[in-house]
Length: 460
Ligand code: URP
Ligand code: ZN
Ligand code: ZN
Image (tube, rainbow, N blue to C red; front, side, top):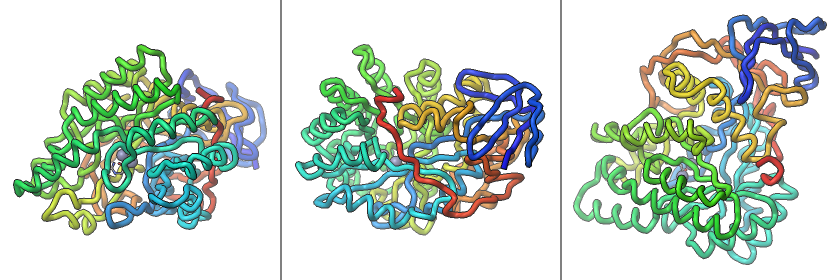
Protein backbone atom coordinates (compact mmCIF):
# COMPACT_ATOMS: atom_id res chain seq x y z
CA UNK A 1 0.00 0.00 0.00
CA UNK A 2 1.49 3.30 -1.14
CA UNK A 3 0.11 6.63 -0.04
CA UNK A 4 1.02 9.95 -1.64
CA UNK A 5 0.37 13.23 0.16
CA UNK A 6 0.48 16.00 -2.42
CA UNK A 7 1.30 19.68 -2.16
CA UNK A 8 1.50 20.06 1.61
CA UNK A 9 3.82 22.57 3.26
CA UNK A 10 6.28 20.39 5.18
CA UNK A 11 7.33 21.86 8.50
CA UNK A 12 10.06 20.17 10.52
CA UNK A 13 12.24 21.58 13.27
CA UNK A 14 14.48 22.94 10.50
CA UNK A 15 12.49 23.14 7.24
CA UNK A 16 9.54 24.90 5.65
CA UNK A 17 8.81 23.99 2.01
CA UNK A 18 6.07 22.66 -0.26
CA UNK A 19 6.53 19.06 -1.48
CA UNK A 20 4.90 15.65 -1.94
CA UNK A 21 5.47 12.80 0.51
CA UNK A 22 5.39 9.16 -0.57
CA UNK A 23 4.73 6.49 2.05
CA UNK A 24 5.16 2.72 1.90
CA UNK A 25 5.34 0.02 4.59
CA UNK A 26 4.73 2.52 7.41
CA UNK A 27 7.70 4.71 6.37
CA UNK A 28 8.32 7.83 4.34
CA UNK A 29 10.16 6.60 1.24
CA UNK A 30 10.39 9.75 -0.90
CA UNK A 31 9.94 13.51 -0.56
CA UNK A 32 10.05 15.77 -3.59
CA UNK A 33 8.43 18.54 -5.58
CA UNK A 34 5.59 17.15 -7.75
CA UNK A 35 6.73 13.53 -7.45
CA UNK A 36 5.93 11.53 -10.57
CA UNK A 37 4.93 8.25 -8.90
CA UNK A 38 1.93 5.94 -8.64
CA UNK A 39 0.10 5.36 -5.37
CA UNK A 40 -2.93 3.46 -4.08
CA UNK A 41 -4.15 6.46 -2.13
CA UNK A 42 -3.64 10.16 -2.86
CA UNK A 43 -4.29 12.85 -0.28
CA UNK A 44 -4.43 16.46 -1.48
CA UNK A 45 -2.87 18.67 1.20
CA UNK A 46 -2.85 21.93 -0.76
CA UNK A 47 -2.94 24.87 1.67
CA UNK A 48 -2.26 22.62 4.64
CA UNK A 49 0.77 22.13 6.86
CA UNK A 50 2.38 18.68 7.16
CA UNK A 51 4.04 18.28 10.53
CA UNK A 52 5.58 15.31 12.36
CA UNK A 53 3.10 13.53 14.62
CA UNK A 54 3.12 15.08 18.07
CA UNK A 55 4.96 13.32 20.88
CA UNK A 56 3.62 13.88 24.37
CA UNK A 57 6.25 12.51 26.76
CA UNK A 58 4.22 13.15 29.90
CA UNK A 59 0.85 11.41 30.28
CA UNK A 60 -0.80 9.32 32.99
CA UNK A 61 -3.30 6.78 31.62
CA UNK A 62 -5.32 4.40 33.80
CA UNK A 63 -2.95 5.28 36.63
CA UNK A 64 -3.63 4.42 40.27
CA UNK A 65 -3.17 7.72 42.08
CA UNK A 66 -4.53 9.37 45.24
CA UNK A 67 -7.03 6.61 45.93
CA UNK A 68 -8.47 6.39 42.42
CA UNK A 69 -7.46 5.86 38.76
CA UNK A 70 -6.99 8.52 36.08
CA UNK A 71 -10.09 8.36 33.92
CA UNK A 72 -8.58 7.87 30.46
CA UNK A 73 -7.46 4.32 29.85
CA UNK A 74 -4.93 3.35 27.16
CA UNK A 75 -7.63 3.14 24.51
CA UNK A 76 -9.48 6.39 25.20
CA UNK A 77 -6.31 8.31 26.03
CA UNK A 78 -4.28 7.34 22.98
CA UNK A 79 -7.30 7.79 20.71
CA UNK A 80 -7.95 11.28 22.09
CA UNK A 81 -4.24 12.00 21.58
CA UNK A 82 -4.57 11.04 17.90
CA UNK A 83 -7.59 13.31 17.45
CA UNK A 84 -5.38 16.10 18.72
CA UNK A 85 -2.43 15.27 16.45
CA UNK A 86 -0.31 13.38 19.00
CA UNK A 87 0.77 10.03 17.59
CA UNK A 88 3.11 8.85 20.38
CA UNK A 89 2.80 9.23 24.14
CA UNK A 90 5.13 8.29 26.98
CA UNK A 91 3.26 7.15 30.07
CA UNK A 92 4.57 6.54 33.61
CA UNK A 93 4.89 3.20 35.39
CA UNK A 94 4.95 3.66 39.17
CA UNK A 95 7.04 1.22 41.21
CA UNK A 96 5.26 0.22 44.43
CA UNK A 97 7.55 0.83 47.40
CA UNK A 98 8.88 -2.56 48.55
CA UNK A 99 8.25 -4.19 45.14
CA UNK A 100 10.43 -4.63 42.07
CA UNK A 101 10.47 -2.53 38.91
CA UNK A 102 9.69 -5.69 36.93
CA UNK A 103 6.48 -6.34 38.85
CA UNK A 104 5.39 -2.76 38.16
CA UNK A 105 6.08 -3.24 34.45
CA UNK A 106 3.95 -6.41 34.43
CA UNK A 107 1.10 -4.57 36.16
CA UNK A 108 1.23 -1.72 33.63
CA UNK A 109 1.43 -4.15 30.70
CA UNK A 110 -1.72 -5.80 32.02
CA UNK A 111 -3.60 -2.55 31.46
CA UNK A 112 -1.88 -1.34 28.29
CA UNK A 113 -1.05 -4.42 26.15
CA UNK A 114 -3.24 -4.54 23.02
CA UNK A 115 -5.25 -1.57 24.25
CA UNK A 116 -3.47 1.37 22.66
CA UNK A 117 -4.77 3.06 19.54
CA UNK A 118 -1.69 5.27 19.15
CA UNK A 119 2.00 4.46 19.73
CA UNK A 120 3.31 4.56 23.28
CA UNK A 121 6.25 4.02 25.55
CA UNK A 122 6.90 4.08 29.29
CA UNK A 123 9.10 5.92 31.75
CA UNK A 124 9.78 3.90 34.89
CA UNK A 125 9.12 5.86 38.10
CA UNK A 126 11.50 4.64 40.79
CA UNK A 127 9.92 5.23 44.18
CA UNK A 128 12.14 2.88 46.18
CA UNK A 129 15.78 2.77 45.13
CA UNK A 130 17.69 -0.03 46.87
CA UNK A 131 20.19 -2.75 45.94
CA UNK A 132 17.49 -4.83 44.23
CA UNK A 133 16.18 -1.91 42.20
CA UNK A 134 19.74 -0.98 41.28
CA UNK A 135 20.26 -4.39 39.72
CA UNK A 136 17.20 -3.96 37.48
CA UNK A 137 18.27 -0.71 35.76
CA UNK A 138 20.57 -2.24 33.12
CA UNK A 139 17.89 -4.72 32.05
CA UNK A 140 15.30 -1.96 31.60
CA UNK A 141 17.63 0.13 29.45
CA UNK A 142 19.13 -2.67 27.38
CA UNK A 143 16.29 -5.17 27.09
CA UNK A 144 13.00 -3.41 27.70
CA UNK A 145 13.78 -0.22 25.78
CA UNK A 146 12.73 1.84 28.80
CA UNK A 147 15.61 4.28 29.06
CA UNK A 148 14.21 7.05 31.27
CA UNK A 149 13.61 6.82 35.02
CA UNK A 150 11.29 9.19 36.84
CA UNK A 151 11.78 10.37 40.39
CA UNK A 152 9.49 12.40 42.61
CA UNK A 153 11.01 14.91 45.02
CA UNK A 154 7.46 15.43 46.37
CA UNK A 155 4.33 13.40 47.29
CA UNK A 156 5.92 12.61 50.64
CA UNK A 157 4.95 9.23 52.07
CA UNK A 158 3.77 7.91 48.70
CA UNK A 159 6.19 8.44 45.82
CA UNK A 160 8.97 10.69 47.11
CA UNK A 161 12.61 9.59 47.13
CA UNK A 162 15.31 11.23 49.23
CA UNK A 163 18.55 12.68 47.87
CA UNK A 164 20.56 9.60 48.81
CA UNK A 165 18.32 7.44 46.63
CA UNK A 166 18.43 10.06 43.88
CA UNK A 167 22.23 10.08 43.74
CA UNK A 168 22.42 6.28 43.75
CA UNK A 169 19.88 6.02 40.96
CA UNK A 170 21.61 8.71 38.90
CA UNK A 171 24.92 6.89 39.11
CA UNK A 172 23.38 3.64 37.93
CA UNK A 173 21.34 5.23 35.15
CA UNK A 174 24.32 7.21 33.86
CA UNK A 175 26.44 4.05 33.79
CA UNK A 176 24.00 2.41 31.37
CA UNK A 177 23.21 5.37 29.11
CA UNK A 178 19.80 6.41 30.46
CA UNK A 179 18.24 9.63 31.74
CA UNK A 180 16.49 10.71 34.95
CA UNK A 181 13.32 12.76 34.79
CA UNK A 182 12.07 14.46 37.87
CA UNK A 183 9.07 16.05 39.52
CA UNK A 184 11.14 18.78 41.14
CA UNK A 185 9.38 20.36 44.09
CA UNK A 186 10.40 20.32 47.74
CA UNK A 187 8.18 17.61 49.25
CA UNK A 188 8.98 18.42 52.87
CA UNK A 189 8.13 22.12 52.52
CA UNK A 190 4.90 21.27 50.71
CA UNK A 191 3.99 18.67 53.33
CA UNK A 192 4.51 21.27 56.05
CA UNK A 193 2.39 23.89 54.25
CA UNK A 194 -0.46 21.46 53.56
CA UNK A 195 -0.58 20.49 57.24
CA UNK A 196 -0.43 24.15 58.30
CA UNK A 197 -3.29 25.22 56.03
CA UNK A 198 -5.44 22.30 57.11
CA UNK A 199 -4.78 23.04 60.81
CA UNK A 200 -6.01 26.58 60.11
CA UNK A 201 -9.20 25.19 58.51
CA UNK A 202 -8.19 26.39 55.04
CA UNK A 203 -9.64 23.61 52.89
CA UNK A 204 -10.48 25.17 49.49
CA UNK A 205 -8.57 24.43 46.24
CA UNK A 206 -6.88 27.84 46.58
CA UNK A 207 -4.81 26.33 49.43
CA UNK A 208 -3.48 23.64 47.11
CA UNK A 209 -1.91 26.53 45.21
CA UNK A 210 -0.73 28.31 48.35
CA UNK A 211 0.87 25.09 49.65
CA UNK A 212 3.24 24.93 46.67
CA UNK A 213 4.81 28.40 46.34
CA UNK A 214 7.38 29.11 43.64
CA UNK A 215 10.30 28.66 46.04
CA UNK A 216 9.41 24.97 46.55
CA UNK A 217 9.97 24.39 42.84
CA UNK A 218 12.97 26.69 42.44
CA UNK A 219 14.80 25.05 45.34
CA UNK A 220 14.17 21.49 44.17
CA UNK A 221 15.03 22.28 40.54
CA UNK A 222 18.38 23.73 41.59
CA UNK A 223 19.07 20.78 43.91
CA UNK A 224 18.22 18.29 41.17
CA UNK A 225 20.48 20.14 38.73
CA UNK A 226 23.34 20.03 41.23
CA UNK A 227 22.94 16.29 41.82
CA UNK A 228 22.74 15.62 38.08
CA UNK A 229 25.86 17.70 37.50
CA UNK A 230 27.72 15.93 40.29
CA UNK A 231 26.88 12.48 38.95
CA UNK A 232 27.11 13.45 35.26
CA UNK A 233 23.70 11.90 34.64
CA UNK A 234 21.50 13.54 31.95
CA UNK A 235 18.43 15.08 33.62
CA UNK A 236 14.99 16.20 32.50
CA UNK A 237 12.74 18.33 34.69
CA UNK A 238 9.09 17.59 33.98
CA UNK A 239 6.30 20.17 34.18
CA UNK A 240 8.44 23.19 35.07
CA UNK A 241 6.14 26.13 35.75
CA UNK A 242 7.90 29.23 36.98
CA UNK A 243 10.56 31.89 36.76
CA UNK A 244 12.42 30.80 39.91
CA UNK A 245 12.79 27.23 38.69
CA UNK A 246 13.84 28.26 35.18
CA UNK A 247 16.44 30.61 36.62
CA UNK A 248 17.84 27.71 38.65
CA UNK A 249 18.21 25.81 35.37
CA UNK A 250 19.70 28.86 33.66
CA UNK A 251 22.40 29.03 36.33
CA UNK A 252 23.01 25.29 36.35
CA UNK A 253 23.49 25.00 32.62
CA UNK A 254 26.41 27.43 32.75
CA UNK A 255 28.22 24.27 33.84
CA UNK A 256 27.41 22.72 30.47
CA UNK A 257 25.53 19.78 31.91
CA UNK A 258 22.86 17.84 30.01
CA UNK A 259 19.77 19.23 31.67
CA UNK A 260 16.48 19.40 29.78
CA UNK A 261 13.25 21.14 30.68
CA UNK A 262 9.65 20.38 29.89
CA UNK A 263 6.78 22.72 30.52
CA UNK A 264 3.13 21.91 29.84
CA UNK A 265 0.55 23.74 27.76
CA UNK A 266 -1.48 24.77 30.82
CA UNK A 267 1.44 26.64 32.42
CA UNK A 268 1.88 28.70 29.24
CA UNK A 269 -1.72 29.81 28.94
CA UNK A 270 -3.58 29.46 32.26
CA UNK A 271 -2.88 31.20 35.55
CA UNK A 272 -3.58 30.88 39.25
CA UNK A 273 -6.58 33.23 39.22
CA UNK A 274 -8.57 30.09 38.33
CA UNK A 275 -8.19 28.93 41.95
CA UNK A 276 -10.21 31.88 43.22
CA UNK A 277 -13.62 30.44 42.20
CA UNK A 278 -14.19 28.17 45.20
CA UNK A 279 -14.45 24.47 44.35
CA UNK A 280 -14.54 25.14 40.57
CA UNK A 281 -10.78 25.57 40.95
CA UNK A 282 -10.50 21.80 41.52
CA UNK A 283 -10.52 21.42 37.71
CA UNK A 284 -6.99 22.83 37.72
CA UNK A 285 -5.71 21.24 40.93
CA UNK A 286 -2.46 19.77 39.69
CA UNK A 287 1.11 19.67 40.93
CA UNK A 288 2.85 22.01 40.55
CA UNK A 289 -0.12 24.40 40.44
CA UNK A 290 -0.79 27.07 37.83
CA UNK A 291 1.34 30.16 38.41
CA UNK A 292 1.34 33.89 37.61
CA UNK A 293 1.34 35.86 34.36
CA UNK A 294 5.04 36.69 34.84
CA UNK A 295 5.77 32.96 34.88
CA UNK A 296 3.96 32.48 31.57
CA UNK A 297 6.21 35.15 30.07
CA UNK A 298 9.27 33.40 31.47
CA UNK A 299 8.20 30.09 29.93
CA UNK A 300 7.51 31.55 26.48
CA UNK A 301 10.91 33.23 26.61
CA UNK A 302 12.47 29.98 27.84
CA UNK A 303 11.16 28.19 24.74
CA UNK A 304 12.76 30.75 22.47
CA UNK A 305 15.98 30.79 24.47
CA UNK A 306 16.23 27.02 24.09
CA UNK A 307 16.15 26.55 27.87
CA UNK A 308 12.76 24.81 27.65
CA UNK A 309 12.85 22.07 25.04
CA UNK A 310 9.47 20.36 25.34
CA UNK A 311 5.80 21.31 25.73
CA UNK A 312 3.90 18.30 27.11
CA UNK A 313 0.58 17.97 28.95
CA UNK A 314 0.97 15.93 32.15
CA UNK A 315 -2.43 14.64 31.06
CA UNK A 316 -3.94 13.09 34.20
CA UNK A 317 -7.72 13.39 33.91
CA UNK A 318 -10.30 12.75 36.60
CA UNK A 319 -14.07 12.86 36.33
CA UNK A 320 -15.78 15.60 38.30
CA UNK A 321 -17.11 12.93 40.67
CA UNK A 322 -13.48 11.99 41.41
CA UNK A 323 -12.47 15.62 41.96
CA UNK A 324 -15.29 15.79 44.53
CA UNK A 325 -13.27 13.38 46.72
CA UNK A 326 -11.63 16.58 47.93
CA UNK A 327 -14.67 18.80 48.30
CA UNK A 328 -13.98 19.37 52.01
CA UNK A 329 -10.19 19.02 51.86
CA UNK A 330 -8.00 20.27 49.00
CA UNK A 331 -5.32 17.66 49.78
CA UNK A 332 -7.72 14.89 48.74
CA UNK A 333 -8.51 16.32 45.30
CA UNK A 334 -6.86 13.96 42.77
CA UNK A 335 -4.10 16.01 41.15
CA UNK A 336 -4.17 16.44 37.39
CA UNK A 337 -6.06 17.85 34.43
CA UNK A 338 -6.99 16.72 30.89
CA UNK A 339 -5.11 18.10 27.86
CA UNK A 340 -3.80 15.23 25.72
CA UNK A 341 -6.19 16.15 22.89
CA UNK A 342 -5.78 19.91 23.18
CA UNK A 343 -2.02 20.47 23.37
CA UNK A 344 -1.15 20.71 19.67
CA UNK A 345 -4.04 22.99 18.70
CA UNK A 346 -3.73 25.21 21.76
CA UNK A 347 0.01 25.69 21.32
CA UNK A 348 -0.46 26.47 17.63
CA UNK A 349 -3.24 28.94 18.32
CA UNK A 350 -1.69 30.66 21.33
CA UNK A 351 1.94 30.29 20.30
CA UNK A 352 2.34 30.32 16.51
CA UNK A 353 -0.72 32.39 15.63
CA UNK A 354 0.03 34.98 18.28
CA UNK A 355 3.64 35.30 17.15
CA UNK A 356 5.19 33.89 20.32
CA UNK A 357 6.99 30.98 18.63
CA UNK A 358 7.83 30.12 15.02
CA UNK A 359 6.47 27.13 13.15
CA UNK A 360 9.86 25.41 13.38
CA UNK A 361 10.01 25.98 17.12
CA UNK A 362 6.48 24.58 17.37
CA UNK A 363 7.57 21.31 15.75
CA UNK A 364 10.72 21.21 17.84
CA UNK A 365 8.87 21.47 21.17
CA UNK A 366 5.85 19.31 20.30
CA UNK A 367 7.74 16.46 18.63
CA UNK A 368 11.39 16.58 17.58
CA UNK A 369 13.04 17.39 20.89
CA UNK A 370 11.06 14.76 22.79
CA UNK A 371 12.06 12.18 20.15
CA UNK A 372 15.72 13.08 20.61
CA UNK A 373 15.76 13.39 24.39
CA UNK A 374 13.92 10.10 24.84
CA UNK A 375 15.80 8.01 22.27
CA UNK A 376 13.24 7.75 19.44
CA UNK A 377 14.84 10.00 16.78
CA UNK A 378 14.77 9.79 13.75
CA UNK A 379 12.18 7.00 13.79
CA UNK A 380 9.85 9.55 15.38
CA UNK A 381 9.93 13.35 15.55
CA UNK A 382 10.51 14.37 11.95
CA UNK A 383 9.32 13.98 8.36
CA UNK A 384 12.27 12.43 6.55
CA UNK A 385 13.06 9.49 4.32
CA UNK A 386 13.17 6.37 6.49
CA UNK A 387 11.19 7.86 9.39
CA UNK A 388 7.85 6.47 10.53
CA UNK A 389 5.10 8.12 8.51
CA UNK A 390 3.54 9.82 11.54
CA UNK A 391 2.18 12.94 9.90
CA UNK A 392 -0.35 15.59 10.93
CA UNK A 393 -2.15 17.43 8.15
CA UNK A 394 -3.08 20.72 9.75
CA UNK A 395 -5.30 23.56 8.60
CA UNK A 396 -3.73 26.73 10.03
CA UNK A 397 -6.83 28.84 9.29
CA UNK A 398 -9.77 26.78 10.58
CA UNK A 399 -11.38 28.13 13.73
CA UNK A 400 -13.18 25.98 16.28
CA UNK A 401 -14.18 25.93 19.93
CA UNK A 402 -12.94 23.48 22.56
CA UNK A 403 -15.56 21.79 24.71
CA UNK A 404 -16.23 18.69 26.80
CA UNK A 405 -19.26 18.15 24.56
CA UNK A 406 -17.03 17.45 21.56
CA UNK A 407 -13.73 16.20 22.94
CA UNK A 408 -12.76 12.52 22.92
CA UNK A 409 -11.04 12.33 26.31
CA UNK A 410 -12.88 10.27 28.92
CA UNK A 411 -13.56 13.16 31.24
CA UNK A 412 -16.77 15.10 31.79
CA UNK A 413 -15.33 18.61 31.83
CA UNK A 414 -12.78 20.56 29.84
CA UNK A 415 -10.08 22.71 31.35
CA UNK A 416 -10.52 24.89 28.22
CA UNK A 417 -14.32 25.03 27.84
CA UNK A 418 -15.26 27.64 25.25
CA UNK A 419 -11.69 28.43 24.13
CA UNK A 420 -11.63 29.74 20.56
CA UNK A 421 -8.80 28.08 18.71
CA UNK A 422 -7.42 28.94 15.26
CA UNK A 423 -5.79 25.95 13.59
CA UNK A 424 -7.19 22.43 13.34
CA UNK A 425 -5.87 18.88 13.02
CA UNK A 426 -7.58 17.57 9.87
CA UNK A 427 -5.91 14.23 9.10
CA UNK A 428 -3.44 12.16 11.11
CA UNK A 429 -1.35 9.33 9.72
CA UNK A 430 0.20 6.89 12.13
CA UNK A 431 2.88 4.72 10.54
CA UNK A 432 1.35 5.45 7.15
CA UNK A 433 -2.22 4.57 8.04
CA UNK A 434 -4.90 7.25 8.12
CA UNK A 435 -5.83 7.19 11.79
CA UNK A 436 -7.92 10.36 11.94
CA UNK A 437 -9.73 12.10 9.12
CA UNK A 438 -12.48 14.65 9.22
CA UNK A 439 -13.23 14.11 12.93
CA UNK A 440 -13.39 10.32 12.63
CA UNK A 441 -11.01 7.64 13.91
CA UNK A 442 -10.09 4.78 11.55
CA UNK A 443 -7.83 2.66 13.76
CA UNK A 444 -8.77 0.39 16.63
CA UNK A 445 -7.19 -0.44 19.93
CA UNK A 446 -4.24 -2.74 19.36
CA UNK A 447 -2.95 -0.70 16.41
CA UNK A 448 -0.76 1.35 18.77
CA UNK A 449 2.73 -0.15 19.14
CA UNK A 450 5.02 -0.14 22.15
CA UNK A 451 8.12 1.80 21.09
CA UNK A 452 11.36 0.43 22.48
CA UNK A 453 13.62 3.42 22.97
CA UNK A 454 17.38 3.77 22.49
CA UNK A 455 19.91 4.84 25.04
CA UNK A 456 19.67 8.61 25.25
CA UNK A 457 23.42 8.80 24.74
CA UNK A 458 22.73 7.87 21.09
CA UNK A 459 20.40 10.80 20.39
CA UNK A 460 21.43 13.73 22.63
O1 URP B 1 -0.99 16.95 39.18
C1 URP B 1 -0.31 16.16 38.58
N1 URP B 1 0.76 16.60 38.00
N2 URP B 1 -0.71 14.86 38.49
C2 URP B 1 -0.01 13.79 37.93
C3 URP B 1 1.17 13.34 38.73
C4 URP B 1 2.37 14.23 38.54
O2 URP B 1 2.83 14.82 39.50
O3 URP B 1 2.86 14.36 37.43
ZN1 ZN C 1 4.61 15.49 38.68
ZN1 ZN D 1 2.79 13.85 35.65
